[in-house]
Length: 231
Image 1 (tube, rainbow, N blue to C red):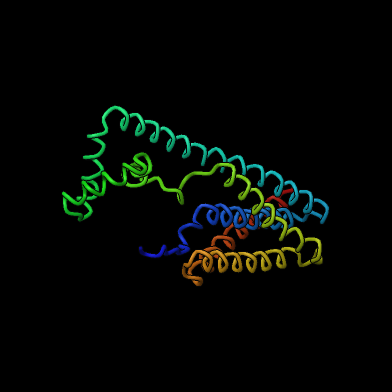
Image 2 (spheres, rainbow, N blue to C red; image 1 turned 90 degrees about the horizontal axis):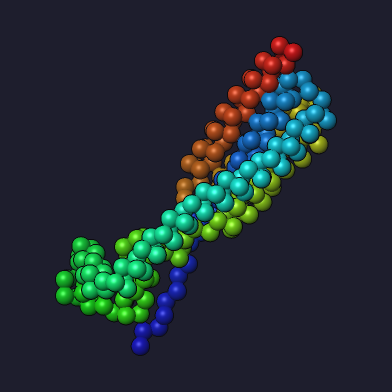
């Protein structure tokens, strides 16, 4: 009897990694951009901190709500497809067997063997076999709304807290530059960590995340300076 072989694949991390990276990245970029924009309008440290904390709280709640609603919609669609498949298996199992066998045959399995495979898989878990091979729903990719919402909120708050710490420690005269530079460093580190965790190219991830972060901060700094001059 062959020994079971277990492997840990990086694709299993996609669900929580996507939410974590998105949350932390948004936390750093949005809060740093807000701080730089407010500071460029010649605001004091107190106003900058109030704006940053408000951005942290609002952003974390927004990320949690957005992720929950978005992933819940995905989950609802998956459940509707599974319910329809469950009904079809109950009312017309022979058609479902032929359908599954055809899927395997189209992938290169000999027709007779494809039917045998379909019969054996359906005998063990008919719905699971159709969910995986017909609908493309697997345990790895299954939508988890609560997990996505909590992960996004927590990582957003963590990312947003980093520029706020810089505001507390930096002299007001160079606050814009220290916040911008430190935030770009934070983004680069985040990009490197997420790329390594997901098995992707580190350099490409770092360049991508720092470019968009720098662009966001530059635009908000320009708008802040413009409004500060007008006021």
